Length: 296
Ligand SMILES: Nc1ncnc2c1ncn2[C@@H]1O[C@H](COP(=O)(O)OP(=O)(O)O)[C@@H](O)[C@H]1O
Ligand SMILES: [Mg+2]
Image (cartoon, rainbow, N blue to C red; front, side, top):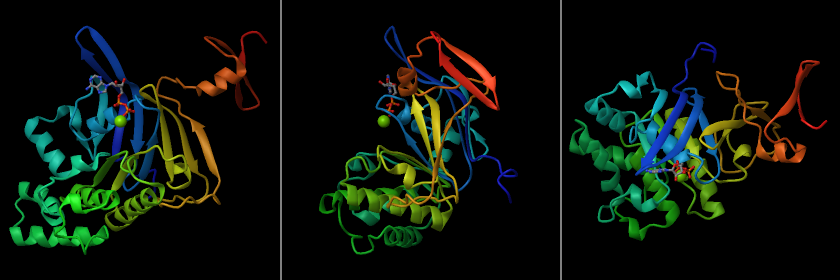
């Protein structure tokens, strides 16, 4: 199958999320578009408060958007009832939180933590244990099966967290700053592990990250600004999924994203450099659109 025949696994169209606190409205997402192909790994970067967690929570079925469309694997998230959502959270998505403590129960061993989400399914007990052990082996913790979280390092805890997220074979893995609390070397190992998961299970993966080198480590990075996707960086040559070490040999291409209404978001630095404020002169010439400051 070529990419033109495959439909996106994750599709967000003109997504809005407005939080209301008393009389105050906070617009966390304002017309966000995102399309992710099956088996693709996409990194999402953006300043604090730009809407990254809001987007992931919506995709995970923890929260509903205020307007717009969102579908995952053909499931229209806005048309699901409570039962559908429960099933969706159990079978379709795995979630890794930044705070390792949020991913695990402190009084359960690694293997018990991984087996726990399987108890919501029909899987027999013996099979649950075997699968949990297999997943812990895959994440490199075959020798820590009986350890409780407090006896594991931060990196090991995130490995367990990834195994927990994979417990029920989800086709989609969402990770909200999974390396945020780790040192650089450990963070690189965890990124490598996402690469292993992607190769092994063909899992579609969205990772929110602050890693400044991320563009050299995944095939595609999208930048979110004020609740909307603004720019995207892709590798020019081959589609590389994800690895902990930066590959700087392959050139990167940066794009500004254009939404369905033709809106683009010009990075603030460009506007400041060119002293463009609330209006600009636009010209189309030689296959190019040029924006110039008003005063010129
Ligand atoms: N539950 C909530 N209630 C009210 N405002 C919220 C809530 N969650 C997030 N926000 C606001 O929405 C915006 C986006 O937040 P968030 O998605 O957490 O950003 P990020 O993960 O990129 O830091 C912020 O202004 C934040 O304060
Ligand atoms: Mg966040």
